[in-house]
Image (cartoon, rainbow, N blue to C red; front, side):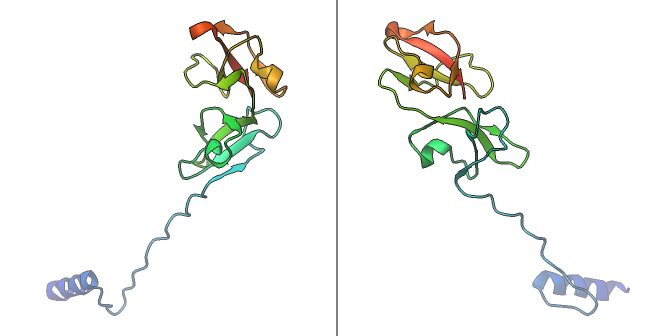
Length: 142
């Protein structure tokens, strides 16, 4: 191909003018990340069907305030994976400041003698450790 013709063809392509024998196609865009959160029984490390997968930086608690969930981990599909439990108690509450909870465990702070697993039998909690103002701190597996 001679030099002036090659330059003219390049110029035409840059302007979007079609030229003979040359076609351009746009690359396929990636599939959009699914919005929101959904129950997901394939999430590993959760008891029963307590797993959730979420996209778009959402958490299960944003969709359902009665849920208490572990910290999310990024799954192989790019979604954030959580272990969650429905939890209501007058003397215990989820506490993200509880240190040393392994894996998909959730930290709780309790006042009084009740433990989180007394409020929800699906939880499996370790022994309570003293916290601030007489509270007991627990790490509980979902």
